[in-house]
Length: 255
Image (cartoon, rainbow, N blue to C red):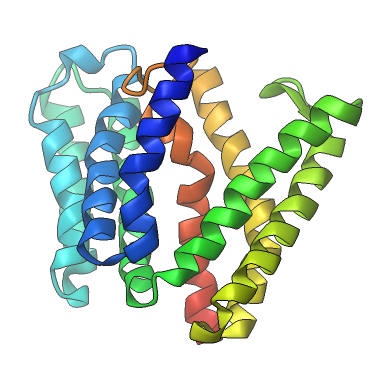
């Protein structure tokens, strides 16, 4: 417990500046998640140690390039990395088609996240709403589930999650993010902010379940041990990643 608390304090100190001020701090945090996410996403594959050493850095580089290059090159980068990974299946004995699809899924998902961060960076207070909605939902689901949770959602994926906790998480995540955002919503589009408060608590629960399904499939408890007592980076930002992508969808539709 002591180690978990110390790590939690460290996490808060590291993410406080990027979340509070955005800018280069947020960009640095996003790049860190892209790079550590590459390792955590891929190394749970049983034969990861036998992969060619260049697969991981090239996949992470592809994600970065989709963001830093002009938008017209997005599909060029995506197509080239897919062709490259599929070619490895043909010419490299220790790289299977499943390995290729794991890498492709990483490039697609994290490219979407990294692009969305670029939109958030324009008015980074939207990230505050997303964070409150995401972790408010997680907190509400935990306490309501422990207090009155009786009906299991999906024991096959997450034995402890209940429908009562699911509903409690949505209500608490919405209430917390909506109320807190009154202190800064004047800087935001109120319609977009309200939709974030409504949708993000729901998709936060979905994101948590999806990442749990990945870990259960590969029979691992955590994505890594980078954060003692908390698992890996992806274990802490799983729901947040999905909600950042959801932000980009709502941002594109509403604004």
